[in-house]
Length: 293
Image (tube, rainbow, N blue to C red; front, side, top):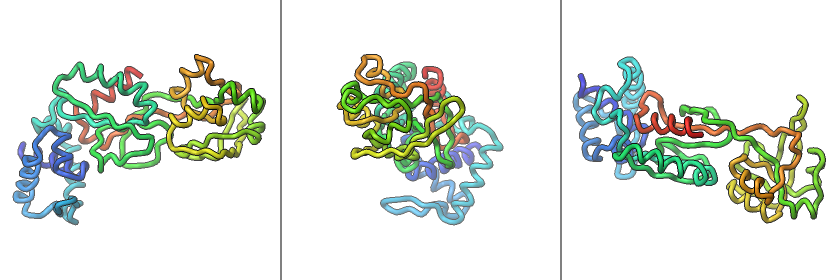
């Protein structure tokens, strides 16, 4: 029974990672051993669960049904870590993390170093990308995301709020004037951050009343650090999460515009693939982030 449960856990990880090698990296097991366990599972139940090619894996029709039943059964028997020695309570193996570039450099990288010092058998890979990554395809264990999460099958834990601040440089304000109300922004050059849900609209709230402003600009980008740098260069105005502008605001390199108005906060989340298959390295890293942030 123990071997069957172990192979079910391994099979489920293969499906989530999309490859034997990805599951091997996640579990700290050789790719050949992962393949052998899945083959033995197929032999024991007498059906093929996976279509294998040199480039990809896909579930057979029976495999899809078996995977869903496998997940439900693992929920019933409890924590899958108790069923296999590969899922230990002590973090080990490779922890693969993705994060937006600005937040990853300023916050995740320093925290990651201190976290790894606690666990000598754990290594990590930090991928910095403002775009939403394919967690399954890239074998990501934890994705740190800033913004608003779309509906998905992924699980998420909110780590903190991230206020968004409207900013411009002193040089830009001297040239173009200081906006006194959201309506004034129609006369200003806006740096468009294309990853926002509504990059060409911004809602300002004060005293319970909201006003939506349509903005325009000649420069657009999908990178928050690029927006921040363009602000410093006096290219226009834009609203960014506080962690991207707080240092420059303190130094006087940027000015917080319309401080009496509120722009909807973004959220900072730790996203992971499935709570049912959560490993010690994932659980403890997310707990660590939540505590430090």
